[in-house]
Image 1 (cartoon, one colour):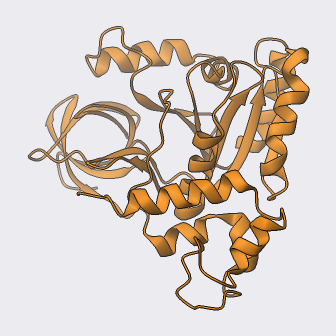
Image 2: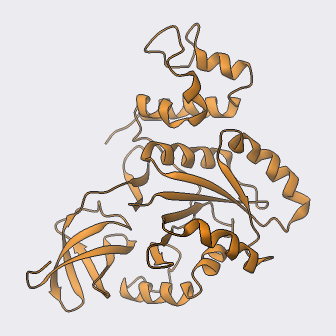
Image 3: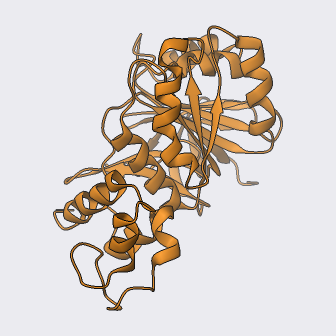
Length: 299
């Protein structure tokens, strides 16, 4: 931007209503006008400087993608403009199929490519069990990549680095899956960067409670998000939901009724696929649960 005091920046961290933007090599503490909190890490924003290191967000530029979760009352933005999602699971502690499936549905609805990362493969006694559980996802065409962040850090870095190249990626997962160890491999100075961002956001020592973006090359970035145990999808309509289940797609349009909800209708192609084992029962159960949730939305 040419006007004095105007900048275009990228949001690299968010905590509550406090944001940190990077603009022309400079980090700026940012606030929104009024009480709006609809800014996500990864957003490209138009800014007006209010001091040498502070700015107001005037406008969010058009997003390529938006990944978020939502409960009955509000939405929680995870990232904007990412084109790749890594869902981090581990051999131990046990991961939640519900959370994995919900993240897959959210990514499909947002048009974001997904890979699953199975971490801690050095814990061999639990490895086969974890692999078996992940077969339901690989059968749908989702790539499962095996790594060991603490056991084989160099090999893990060598495996993941090419996959990040040229992409805007985000890592999500439950607490305890080893996401922080993976970030430290991908971003060698992540701890220092996190401390700096934390100080800039005035969040003190709560370094794991905010989402932040790291550059991992000239045209690549990776976003780290806090671990969470729930992934609400109240914002997805019925039509969006059925299309966001990749395993349903071959059967959509094959039902007797054009407005089939795939719950208990006669001659439903999706239900027939479930009964024949072509769609996993747990996936159809989740679909029914999500349909119910979407009907409960209050916002």
